[in-house]
Length: 144
Image (cartoon, rainbow, N blue to C red; front, side, top):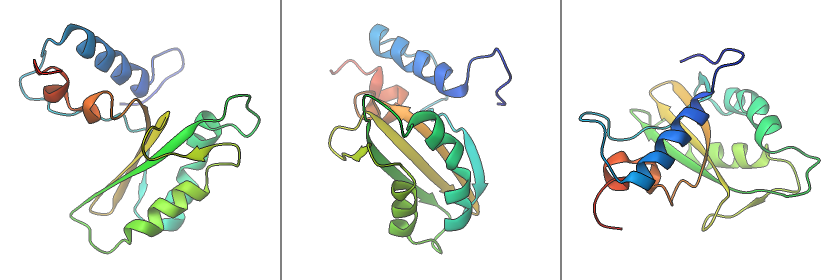
């Protein structure tokens, strides 16, 4: 889906869905298991990822801020074994400016990096672990 002026972004739509599902605990889909909002897609290389993530960093992690964010980088690769996991994680983490800190246990925002074959998909999500890793079935299950 493409973001147009005046329309909600994929992140806003997915976060609204997850908040609604978490509060009602009512499963609304038969075939959807997990929803991740992706804002940037690029070729899966360290240089391209570093270049493509710059607009997201400027939007979600501003340099001049009163409240620094804690973040984590979540990496997943499918059908691709040629890319070093730690190189990508380090490249993404190094692109986040100074006042913001890495916190793998309790991050405010999580940067999701999904690599599928030669395509890299990047998105920034909030409350990733609290919302059952954006897994609809786990989020709506009867067990708390």
